Image 1 (cartoon, rainbow, N blue to C red):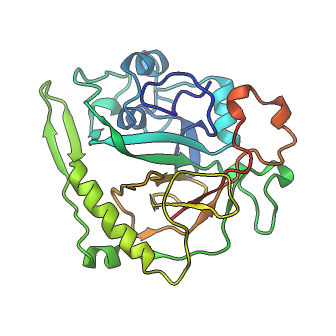
Image 2 (image 1 turned 60 degrees about the vertical axis):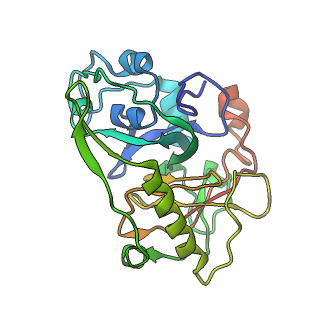
Length: 274
């Protein structure tokens, strides 16, 4: 099943694959730092990431099943980013892994955002129809940019603090109030674009895609961070907010019949990521 869909880590059917951690074009089994940001269970992290050597330059010690890796390489992945945002700056970057005693920090079920992973190999080429050649997602033709200078001028709040928690582990965080403040600023920035966009909300099966706001740490082929809830959150914006992406997952895919049940259920799903 898909285990990155919710912070409880429970295996479930999902419209998305397991989230993959993508850096510089390389996507791997979800990194332990990303797992901690999603507040995935401690025991699950110990089982998947503990007592293992690092296998990439970012000291990723996590190992997923072959089936999970295959799904994540073919379909868009997703994982939640609950508030308040917490990031272990150092403790989870060592190998072998030592999970901080204070993990997981408390989190609220609402509001929340999501991160998405877009596998480069499954991207549709320009002009290619979804499902053609087994491609599972594509960039929307219409696009617009919002630059960091613009949102800074609108009062973007860069408040971000680093401190040692009760157990002495270094933690970086920003308050929920800051995330909501920045979400409102970004919403106004996108509303000012000379481009008609649908209102924010959950993904739905419709001819009109759903909009969500996202950081542009990566372009469409790497990890895209996004919110897709009514009160979209925004954190750590890049130098520009990257374009619009349309993803239809599994639609018209001739290999779908060979997929396990947890890979199904997303026919016709559309999302737009800004």
